View: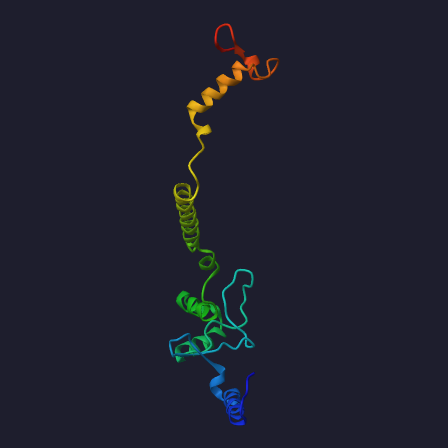
Length: 177
């Protein structure tokens, strides 16, 4: 039985209570590195580039510098006054990647094919190892000499002479028909 004294129970509850009400409970420690990482709040709109949702919940850059703020003010005017670089800078404030950049091949297929070939090769090595060290040697009935003797025995016994094995052997000439 597990016996806890009142002091141990009180200490356990007080430590849990302090951890529950402290601000550090929002943070998580990384695995063994001692660093503290901020936990993402999934209730706020997130930004990600996806082909199926072309307009993300929020712009790519939330915090704007003074130059970006002045460019945003210039955006409210006629767009004919904006240069190509300014239009591109405005686009990059809203989006991280364009559709062409999102559709660009990543080369991940090379990793997948390499992994497939690795596991096929590893499986081949396992099968080869099993063939030499696990399975018993082939029985003597698989030898060519044994099979030739078996065929001769079946011909001597005239097995299935009408339509079968012996029907295809010419006994007078001693060869197959």
